[in-house]
Length: 189
Image (cartoon, rainbow, N blue to C red; front, side, top):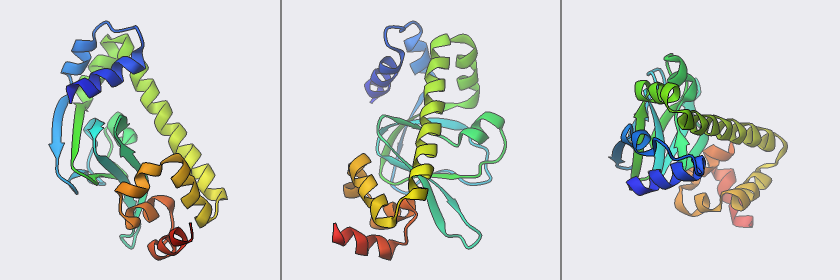
């Protein structure tokens, strides 16, 4: 699995490979089971995760403890509660495994040290931030203007693997649709 992280990092850095082994050595390999809680709302986020295999859910609970999914993070992507990770303040979101996962985690101190000492890592971090921001803004802006049926079509077009590997309840939460409505509309497609 270490090769997955190395290849991802090489793809992000291009030919600028100085210090690659040092960067990789700062990550810890983690193997999880399904439904393991990696971060609980109110805790301080201590890690950024690279998903080598599996799927993570980033979600919040409303006052009635209903769950809303902000993101579903699959292989070859990064996941964290970046506001808490960067500031050291309590997290506003939860992160859990949806499937058994193979992850690479880097803690805050190692992350900051690499940002200060390895210029290429700063480039990777900026890419993580930009991708996270772009994904969130695009999804919010898109979902505001789409009907429930169009959201399902969007997911089928833009992230089709999620439809076959995740539960209808989880997908409905991600799309902001009641799970019964989701099942009814999905049957029409």
